[in-house]
Image 1 (cartoon, rainbow, N blue to C red):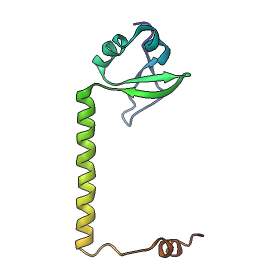
Image 2: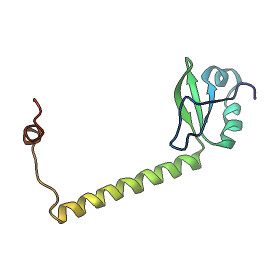
Image 3: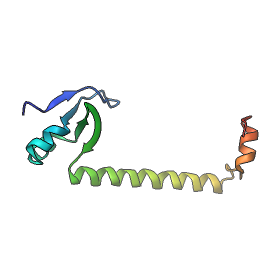
Image 4: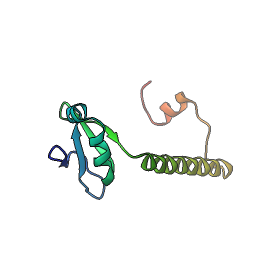
Length: 104
């Protein structure tokens, strides 16, 4: 797999290195190159030498979607709790602009 390279163009908070594959390589060799690369996690596809896409396995996608939904629901619950405890004031866009001393 000489075309598969490890790059530091994207870093997570733990400073891990991402796998990248040029889009031209996928076009040339087909999806089998993706299947092989996905065994070790998501693959970043480069288009014009820039990151353009991320491909991940279905189970990884489902886990990501599950975590996103859980986080979303958690934020909604916290907002409702704030509302019930009176920590929320109704505003219009105009009153918010005035309160923040912004220009409309």
